[in-house]
Amino acid sequence: MTRPRQTSDDTRKQLSTKLRLYWKLIKSLQTGLLLATGVAGFMSARCPALDWRILLSMSGSLFLAISGSTVLNMWYDRDIDGKMPRTCRRPLPSGKVSRREALLLGLVLSVAGVGWAVALQPLYGLVVFAGLFIDVVIYTIWLKRRTAWSIVWGGISGGMPILAGRVLGIAALTGVAQIDLIGVLLSLGVLFWIPTHIMTFNMRYHDDYQTARVPTFPSAYSFQMTRVTIAASSLAAALTMGGAVFLIGTTFGYLRLLVVLSTALLLMAIYSVVRPSDRMNFGLFKYASIYMLSLMLLLILGAL
Amino acid sequence: MKKISILDRILLLIVGVLAAYKIVVGIEGFGTLTIVCYTIAFGVLMFAAFLFIIFGFDILDSKLVVIVAAAIPLILSLALIAEYLPSIRTVYMALAAVGLVALAITRYAAPDTVATVVLATVHGIAGLLIFSLPIIFAVQGKTPPGFALVGVGGGVMGIGGLSLVFLKLGKPILSRETIFTVLPGILLFMTVAFVAGLAMR
Image (cartoon, rainbow over all chains, first blue to last red; front, side):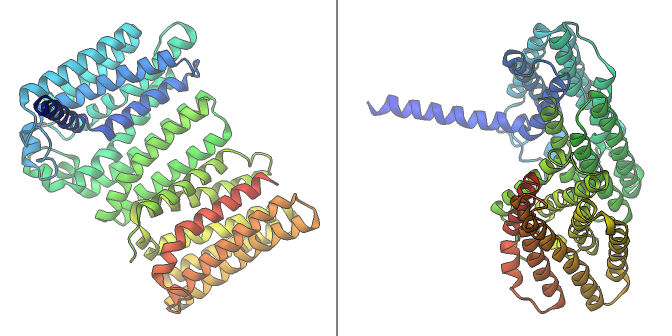
């Protein structure tokens, strides 16, 4: 009687370990933030927000597609990750998950996510596919190891979930899916926000990226030039997001909050140019995440 | 320097969310200047809470943060004056501007003692106004009784602010450890009092 029970316990333990490793492979925080942008894009259309069937289907398909692209990204970059102290303990470079297993997982998640998205609404599916394709093929495989400007393509793929959510929201509201000006502005807002998020990280782990020979803005154009770029990009993000939120027709209360959040981002970015320090740089990185999450909550709550 | 704990971060996050809530809801009925002042004051409070969460308590060593933090009572008091004592609005606005400029100049170009005395004066006057005006108005019946909570918030802010000022002067009323232990709670209590008081106006 003891042996079958022990076997069942072992299986449960193995399954739990496996799921924990897979969870690490999908970068849950990053995936969660991108998913939040998708939900915010959907809600921004002021569609029937409590249509849980569409909302859950959108969240499910986006989660699978974003997770799939992240796993494929991790699979392709396993050699780079193995060279950097920050990432060498990740499941792939540490050998806890095999290459074949990760590739299979990434493909299954991606196909399931895009397939579900296309079945839900073809144009929505196309935007989700575009995000995945740009992230995996153009950004990760083609450009990341060649040019510091690959970040632009990373940014474009990062802006796809919010655009996809908006497209599906419009389709749910009007019955006709389309890419509108607000959707483009929201997407641009995320694109312009990406440098604040990524380049601060590039500066913090500059040595790691050098070791792995990954070209970044700080290594190609100096730290100070990167800080100026971050400040300019933050301004562009604030303006485009502000434009989008204004066109959506959100109340003045939410607009006031948007102005406060954006002003704080700009002040930190400018302070980082005038008085550069590692601490300020990492503070800006953290605030950028708070900023984006707050904006998405603002869009969601503003639509209710 | 005391390390910021998970509980501190949670309390500060609630401060940030409450301040954000107040920016969005419940100040529409005021005049334009009052709305601008409340937006700036609660905006700075929200941002200050985020800065504490990100950097910890040693952010208070930054000169710029001290100036910006002192703007909270100054601008809140200006909002109260603008709304309830419009006859002295322009004079107080000028005084507030002078106070803020004096704070900025002395922080960067004067000995620490002078800078701290200016900080204590500006903080003290603004704090006293936020503490006394809502209570006086509530007692006089100009506002509903609940508005006095804004005064309670002002009183708590004054106590917290003065503790920090005396700490900077090197004559602490409470130890540095104790101040930083109670600071998130004080900030939360103060914010709840402001938000509740303004909601009951």
